Length: 134
Image (cartoon, rainbow, N blue to C red; front, side):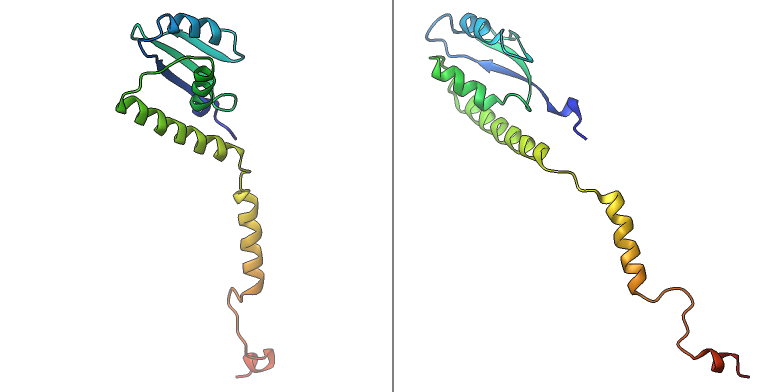
């Protein structure tokens, strides 16, 4: 079962200083998205976003914004952080799509099969007639 708290992500987008007015334009653009939260960030050039990775990914959002002409801060730390988030979200998204193993029911079946094929209990190969002979 998917835990909805694990799929909810809170991120912050940091825009470059040029061109001016990017934050306001991005805020207006992102406000209308389905199941998506956006608000002003901790810095004047940032937006705080919230989304579910079943619907969005940071990489997809940033690529869509770049296609619209937005530019993000391009220092090494921010680039590395974004790449790490891209990778983690991609792995988590694909793991959510994998079917769950039915270990509880299959575990019992496997145990029964092994039990049937192996001798168990107090087993004696001596014929019954010879066991009772004294």
